[in-house]
Amino acid sequence: MDLFPAENGPKEGDRLPPLAARMRPQTLDDIVGQEAILAPGKLLRRAIEADRLSSVILYGPPGCGKTSLAEVIALATRRAFERTSGVAANVETLRGLMRQAAYRKANGGGDTILFVDEIHRFNKAQQDVLLHDVEKGAITLIGATTHHPGFFINTPLTSRSLVFELSPLSEAAIRTLVERALRQDPELTALGATLEPDAADWLASVCEGDARRALNALEVAALSGGDRTGPAGAVRITREAIEESVQKKAVVYDRDEEGHYDTISAFIKSLRGSDPDAAVYWLAKMLSAGEDPRFVARRLIIFASEDVGNADPRGLTLAVAAMRGVEFVGMPEARIILAQATTYLATAPKSNASYKAIQTAMGDVESGRVLAVPHALRNKPVRSVNAAERGADPYLYPHDFAGHHVKQEYAALQRRYYEPDGQGYEDVIRQRLERWRAAAAKPAPERVARPPTKRGGSDRKKQTGKRS
Image (tube, rainbow, N blue to C red; front, side, top):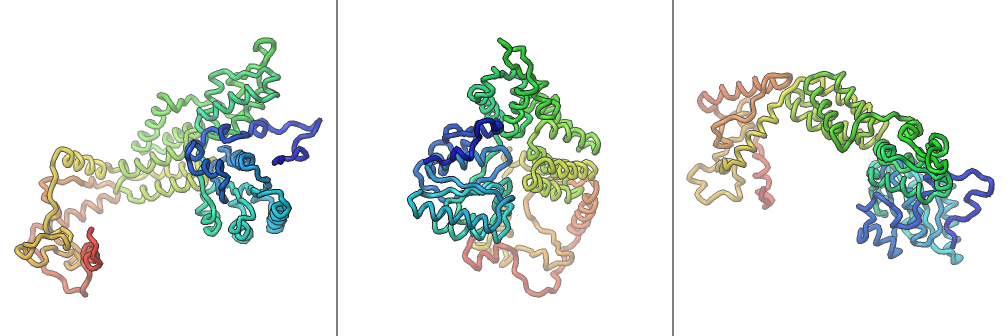
C-alpha cells in the first residue's frame, strides 16, 4: 500500500521540495535527537512496533520532528495517512476526513492516521468533533502542537491520547542531520557540496534545535552562497556563506567554553551591580548567540532569591512568572519577557540575607550541630507519655496573643542566621524583628480573649489519625 501517493509528490519539471522535506526520515532508526521517547524499550517505540498505537499528542518546539515522526509512524504501521492543519481545517473538513477513514476501513483499506498539525489552533467545538471517532478507534489521531497540551487541548481529547514531549534537537543531532544531507541528498551530492567544520559547528549552535531551519539554510548556502573552490569545482560552504543564509551574523559566544560562562557571569554581575543597561546587553548577546532562553530564566529565578531576596519579595514572583512565560510563548517574543524580568531585578533593592542565612544554617547542620525538636513543637500524636509533667499544652498559640506573636523556644539556638540589612522591604522586616525581640525581654503577656481556634496543622491531623 502506498502511504504517500505519487500524484501528491513532485512531477517532472516541478521544483523540488525543500531539503528538509526531502530528508524526512523513513524509519524509527532514522530519527535523531528523540531518544528519550524513541529509544528501544520506550513506551512509544513499543506501541509503534507492536502496532498497538492509540491516539497521540506530540508537542515540542518548531523543527524538532513532530511531522516527521507522524509520517514514520504511518510507514511503520502501514496505515493510510491523512493530514490537515488547525489553521486550514474547519468542522466540515474534519468530518469529511473521518468519513473517508470510515469508508476506507469498511472496504478493506485498513486503518487511518489523521495527522493534525497545530492542533492547538482548533477551538473546543472542532476538537470535540474528533472525540467520537477517536474513542471508538475509527481513526488514530496524531496531533502536533508547539504549545503544552494541558493548556490548549481539551481534557477529554488528551485523556484518550498518549502525550509525548519532543525536545529541541541537540547540536550533535543537528550536525548528524546536516552530514546525512550532504551524503545522501542527490542535489547536494551532485554539487559535491562540503561544509567547513567551523560552519557546521556554528550552524548547529545557531539554529536553536530546529532541524528545518538548519537544513533549509544549508540548501540555500549550497545553491547560492557556496564557492567552487573545492576539488573539481565542487561547492565549498564557508561559515560566511552559512551566516548569510541564516541571515544572522555569528556572535563570539561558545556555549561549551569560556564565552558561555563569561557572558552569563557578566549578566549576573551586572544585575547584582544594579546596571540594567549592561544586563540587557549581555541578555541580548546570549539570545542572539542562540542561548536557551529557559537557561536565562532559571538564572533569573536564582538571582531573585540570592541577590534580591526580601528586599523586594516581588522579584521572585516576577522571575517565576517569567520562566512560565518563556515556556508558554517561546522565542522570539520570550526575549521581551526576559528583558522585563532583567530590568526589574537589576533596579530592585538588593539583599543576600536569605542566602547567607541558609548557607550558615546548612554549614551548622552539616558540621554536626543537629538539634532536637523542642517538646512543645512536637506533633501531639507522637509526644512521649510524660508530656503531662511539662504541662497539658506547653505550646503557646501565637494567634492567642496581642500582635499574633509570643516568645517561646522554637530551636535551642545561640546564634542568628537571618539578619535583614535594611534594604527595601527588608527594612520593614528588620523593624518588625526588633519589636519582637524587645517584647521578648518583657514579662510574658497574657492571652487575648478570642473565639476558639484549631491550633495548627498537627492538631487537625490528630483528628484524622494522621501524623505530620
